[in-house]
Every structure is written in structure tokens, then in C-alpha cells.
Length: 173
Ligand SMILES: [Fe+2]
Ligand SMILES: [Fe+2]
Image 1: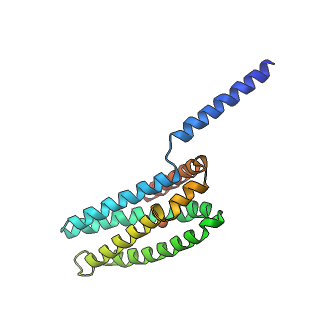
Image 2: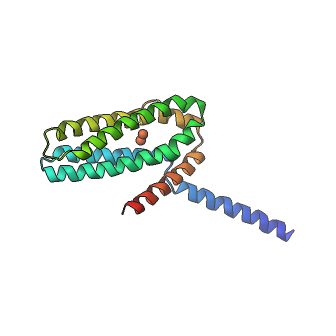
Image 3: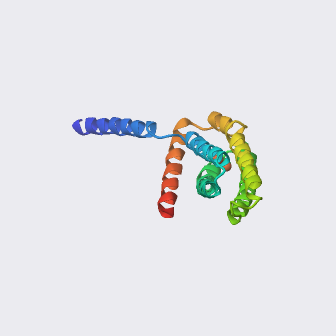
């Protein structure tokens, strides 16, 4: 009897702890939106300055943020979404857009900020990234995911994304 009570108590505590733990983290969609917002602000700063060195520095930050973001989406988020038949096409389209973005990132990385091609290419990258982020957030993807996937699963995924992000950032530093 006592043992049973202890075991029931243990289960209640464990589930409370789990709820507390899950409640403290961002879900996957919130985390990805936060990443989008960060990059959006960096682009804004990049366009506001005329200082070439600063432009190049901001571009480097954008590149690193986008590479990490694309990596965690491609290795964790999209594969989880792809398990749902209704999301498959959207994931495939997103992957194609990632490929295009990586090409522009590579090309821009090779240009010096004093090149006359730097500014227009930077603008194209900004527009394409914003279009891609909007498609994910306000297009059909995130709203559909909210309807299809339980919050608990999205929180769990959020934790995995967060952990992968930190692992990658630690490696880079
Ligand atoms: Fe993406
Ligand atoms: Fe994204």
C-alpha cells in the first residue's frame, strides 16, 4: 500500500515536473519565428549603414544565422513535418528555396563590400529571405502545423531545435 502511494506520488511529481519543463521552453514555431525576426533586423541594419566594413560584418552575421537556421530546419524540423502527408509539398518547396538562398549567400560571400554588385545582391538576398520566412510563417505552413500538431510535440521539437542550435554555435566559437 505504502509502496503504491509512493509510486503514485512519484508519477504525479514526475508529470508536474515535465509540465513545468515543457512550459518553460519555446515551441518550434516560436523559436523559428524568433530566428526570422533576428535576421530581419540584421538586414535592416545592413541597409541603413553606408559603411562598407560594417556592411560586410553584418552580412557575415546574417550568413552564420541563416546557415544555422537552415541546418536545424533541414535536419530536425522539416523531417518531422514531412511525416505528415499534408505538409510534404510545402517542405519540398521550402527545401528548394533553401537551395536558392544558399547560392546567393555563397555568391555574396565572395564579393567585397566595395563591389558595385554587393548592395543589389544583398537586397535580393533580403527580399528572398523575407519571402521565404513569410511563406513559412504566414503562408500555409505554420498555420497548418498549428492545426495538425499538438502543442506538446511542438514544444519537444522546440527543445531539440534549441539544443542543436547551441551545439552548432558552440562549435563555431
Ligand atoms: Fe526555411
Ligand atoms: Fe525558417
